[in-house]
Length: 295
Image (cartoon, rainbow, N blue to C red):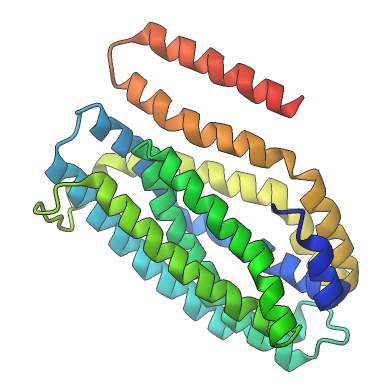
């Protein structure tokens, strides 16, 4: 689904416009550093909850605390892009025919899109931890299709500009966030139990979250540093070609990512239990599946 609509993007927006979309994806990836290991920690704690190692009050307190942090960081993302967007348009990317105003406005709009998509990742991690994978995968499939191909209708009906592209993506991201939140809260249950901000809950996941956060920083630097450098030294058109090649070559990671998102909560649930043999069997099973997917 990531690769399929690309030829249409290039047809409507041009290679330069597609290069700007590649810059958008790059910025979104770098903002993942601000997760600080929260989403894998949430997924792990919900797996413990499913194994009855946490009470409903404890998990509700943790969710409320992490949601508040995520909300505040989302506001920070929007603020950063509002302030930095015009500077990026003038001093960083090499604009051709798009125009400084269009690119500047695009970067400012991007803040809202990244914040919504980033926050949606919180509820995706929650649904993964709860093993509500049917609901999650169905939602991902629907919204990925709408994002990928629905935007083509918007470009055809209104205007084939990056601004229209972003506005449509923001609207879809807002609806997706709402749907994921509803699914997640239904998955938790016990609506009469109210969560509250808890330093103790955050302290309980701090060590694990720190380790995962450091790992994420390493992943972002190793996989995205080349793209960050290229956005400064090449034109948007050239970066568009590079983004296209990167998208095609990275498609295999989508299958591996889908496997790990299923395996990780299962490992967490088994790790807090007493069945070491079941954990070993699960590890070997998912390792074989991942190997087959890569080959």
